[in-house]
Amino acid sequence: MPKKDKSGILDLETASLVFKSATTGQLQWIWKLIQEKKLERFGLRSKEDEKDKAEFDRTWDQYLAFGSAQRLNEDDDPTFEDAERCMKHFIKAWDSTYYSGPIKGLDRGNYKLDDEVAFYIKESFERYLERRFADRKKGDLEKAFRTNGKRGVKKPFPSALSGYVPDVIQKIMNEFMDKDEVRIGKPSLNITNVIESYSTSEDIKLSTLKDWWKEYQENALVYFEMQLALDDKDFTETHVKQIREHFIEDFRK
Image (cartoon, rainbow, N blue to C red; front, side, top):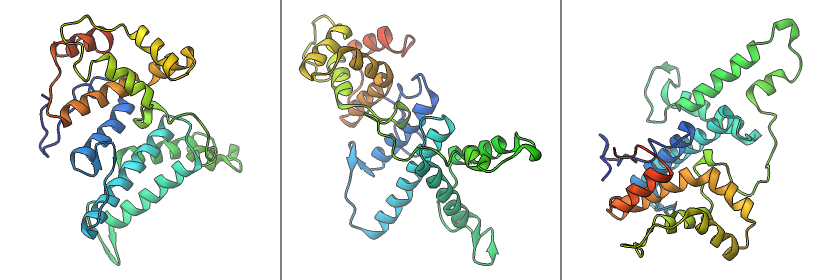
């Protein structure tokens, strides 16, 4: 089973070994929220107690700010709203941590500046300062901070960097990994055959579904591990074999 960190949060083995470190950060945030009972499985839990709600709102706001900064830093189709959210996060973190009325340095809570947001601000300043003063023109600051991003870009799904997994991709992963343990003692499934089957049953173009699988399979694997952990289960020998052969070659070696 995954080991717990100092705060009692289970580490995810697959999340630490997936291919994009940026994706890992968002998935770890989601797992943190689930483990702290601020997310119920993969949906929001209602909060009635005002103290709990305030704590949840603060954590949720930091989670959203991390995601926005990540999209900006990775140039992953960021929007104007992402830049605005990071700016608001910076202001709130400053007000909460560094300044209280006329008294500087007074700690006012646990709302701290997220590293990803801080990196976005640093990079934005550097992008702006790369141009000589004489060469700067109107709009350069907006470009540096990427506040001129498109509003409300319509895409089928959020990118994998956001920690998102389309339902059909999670279904493919769960069946391929035999989540319900209906294939114990039987040969493992062929992933190509599983994808082709879902292409037919879900009426999705095969090439499109293969593209989705390529982009989101690592996230789906991490969510698969989350589901096992929430059910107090560990990877079976078959799971480990599948992971080594198809996702992480040196898994648990």
